[in-house]
Image 1 (cartoon, protein in one colour):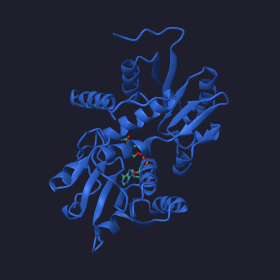
Image 2 (spheres, rainbow, N blue to C red):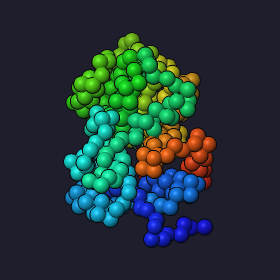
Image 3 (cartoon, rainbow, N blue to C red):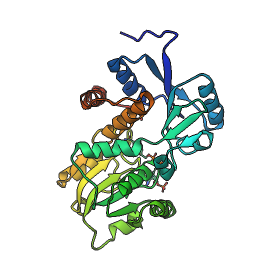
Image 4 (tube, rainbow, N blue to C red):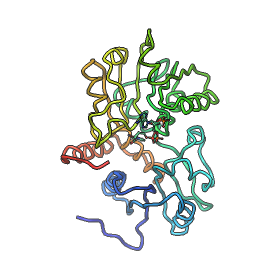
Length: 297
Ligand code: NAP
């Protein structure tokens, strides 16, 4: 049965461009329904040129909370009244919470990833982490990992300057060992280190290019203990499939997606969502993927 909207219903949403394939409305509207909260969560297509007006308008319309996705996670920062310290370190915001003065910014991507790892009983203190890619998701993974006490981070990226920028930003806040290398250098490393956790953050292998993988060398996977791919469409990418064949533990990006959404909901509603409900939402999302033969990007 669809929700009855009244004059008292609060509005939440997600800003992005494009936004029509966002899965966030499914997550948040299920949470609201299960928790009996009188709110609706809707997608808002907002182009980069209209972002400032969209934020002002959302506040004027008393929209209580917003998620922000590609391409606005960094460019939204100047329009916020406050940004929390973790989001500041990442240089990106994915959650806005309304206050009387304007919106405050948070970033729940790193927390979502951390919760996914915790669910698989993976701890980070003293571990060696490799991050494939240097974009927004890689930044969230690196800052989260550093904050949890990883011993060493390797950053592998196509554009070495982007990897070096991330290295500099991580080292500005955390005194840990960070190494950068290109994909070619990675292939030629004679003594590849043993990596506890390798996080694939590039879009390579995402629908409709599901046959692609950033790396297919079995020697690479033999040095990895756990492989995470932040892609969730398909649920098992070629990268994860090769990692599994090599005996690695594998984790896809759906849990991070669901858990970052749940963290945002908890921030907005100042509540704690039970682990049972979190698992229910995750199962619902898995079913959603399994029931579709082909998913759009
Ligand atoms: P982004 O900021 O655009 O960064 C993309 C990264 O991938 C960059 O480092 C880029 O390298 C690299 N890359 C892109 N195309 C490449 C190619 N053809 N060959 C080699 N490297 C390539 O994107 P993002 O926001 O980090 O998102 C990246 C992925 O993570 C997407 O698939 C997204 O769906 C996923 N993600 C998932 C979640 C989740 O909750 N599961 C959350 C956030 C993101 P250069 O620096 O050389 O350009």
